[in-house]
Amino acid sequence: MGKLRVSLISLAALVALSACGDRDAAPNLMNLRNTDRTPDEFSILPTTPLLQPETFAELPVPTPGGVNRTDPNPKADAVAVLGGRVDAGVAGDRGLIATVTRYGVGSNIRTTLAAEDEAFRRANDGLPLERLFNVNVYYKSYRPQSLDQYRELQRLRDAGVRTPAAPPDPALLEQ
Image (tube, rainbow, N blue to C red):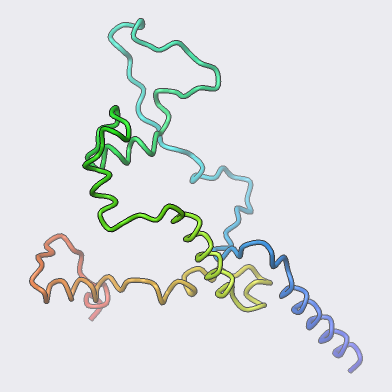
């Protein structure tokens, strides 16, 4: 009976200590860790293909530490996808800026969203045993904010919106 009591007290102390943790750090709801020694395929960035110019005189002078012509440029790619002109800069994209900001824009939106998300993650960071065993609680935490894609699809179809390329609900295929 004495060993069982010591084991139970040890387990209770371990659970209590695991709940303490570093409360100043923002909770990480995903708890994904690469435990093997293989390369991380998500750290590889896609680059644009290498192209040989007509003449090598067209190539820019190399700048150590500078950008490469094949490096990804997410800002310019986003501007191009949204219909803006990459070479014009912000002043040349008045139409794009007007469209994107048509519902208003907050000057501190990034700070506000970061603070709200951190507060949400702190309130939904899992139970003590889930934190102790690094259980992934991301999907459970964000489930109330998730869109039921098939219910929304049905709502759109009921409203008369054509959705020809939408895949069928897998639950209906199983019947």
